[in-house]
Length: 297
Image 1: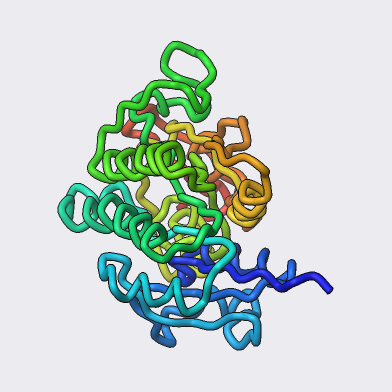
Image 2 (image 1 turned 180 degrees about the vertical axis):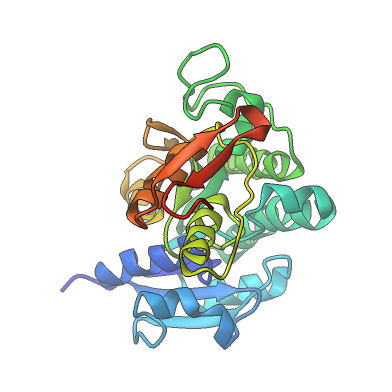
């Protein structure tokens, strides 16, 4: 009989954590899910996936800045795999709280890696890196500003505290993989969306706003540059990729993306069509306005 694997998901209450839990439970894993705060209102994503009361998931609170607590968790559960999805995921908020973001993402990852070494265990490790590490090279999703394909060997040039912290953590993974022979892999994740996304992210902001416009509870939806182009994928697919990375015999770093760029404008158009808006655009650049021909709004 095959031994049931144990995986620790750090950041299980987030979008990626919930989808990863779904992936692992479907593969008969025992999942230890931790977050800095486990409260009933934080579990809505797991509830949406029917996992909040799963017998295969054990939930607990953990701040990976707390080295002794992290070490106790590892020694207690002896995980086969660790998925580090923790930390702030908003680029904008990293400018408001650069110290907090840098400590959580950068030093938090360092403490976690040190706890793994101190535990004497050899789990396989997944690090959620970000396309924000490419900085201006990420202007046109998987293409850089010169039209060349971005790959895992492309130069990094982060332009935010978030991207910088992610890059520090990313290089830590490379260093610990080489210096300590850890099976540690980083996924350079491009934008990935789902119904479990926070409403402050543009994909959900668009959907939420258009639904409110449709119901009459909102008059205007204001967005930034609608011609901004990004590579958007589905978070559930990306978490399947996260699991697959740790099944590889050799650890490595991988870009996870669709390779298909889409503009914010195109997302608005698809969502508007699904809600039966007859959308037309007026104006140009920052003065562009979308109007529903049926209602005139």
